[in-house]
Image 1: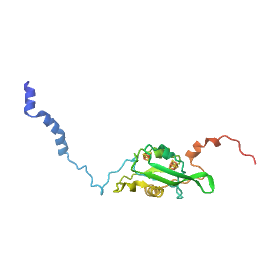
Image 2: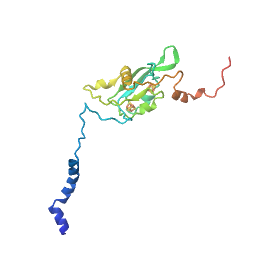
Image 3: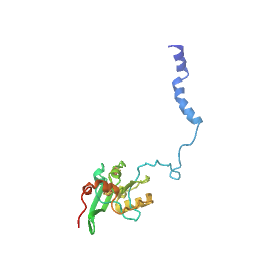
Length: 179
Ligand code: SF4
Ligand code: SF4
C-alpha cells in the first residue's frame, strides 16, 4: 500500500469528504421548514389542484353537456348526464355532473378537452377527508368550488363561444337564405 493511500485510510478520508457537505449546510444553517398550515408556500401559477365547474359573469353555467371531458378522462372520473335546454332543442346542458375525485390524476386532459372552458383547475390541495365518499362531488359542489376559486368570471358571449364557432364548419360558406 502506498503511503498516500495508507494516510487516507488512517484519517478516514472518505468519511471526511462525505461530512464536508453536512458541515457546509450546518454552518450556513437557515430554517427551510414552514409552519404549515399557518404559513403556506406559494404555488406555481400552473399548479393543477382541485377541479371546478365555471360560470359566466351573469351566473349561467358554461357547461354545454357535450361529454367531451368524460371521453377525454383516462381515469373515468367524470360522469355527465346531458339534456336539452327546455324550449331550445338545439342547445344542451349538463343536467347532472359528477366527479369521483378519488380517481383523479390531475392530468388536466378534461380541461383541455372542454370546448367552452367550463372546467378549471384551482390551486386548492387541502382535500384530505376521513370518508372517501366525500370526494364524490356533484355539479352544485363543483360550481361552488368554481365560484370560490375563480371570482373573476368570463363575460357571457351573446351567441356562440369562439371555440364552438370554430368547430361549427357546416354553417360556413353557404348562401344567404332568400325570404
Ligand atoms: S384531471 Fe385528468 S384524471 Fe382528473 S378528471 Fe380531468 S382528465 Fe380525469
Ligand atoms: S367538456 Fe366542458 S362543456 Fe362538455 S360536458 Fe365537459 S365540462 Fe361540460
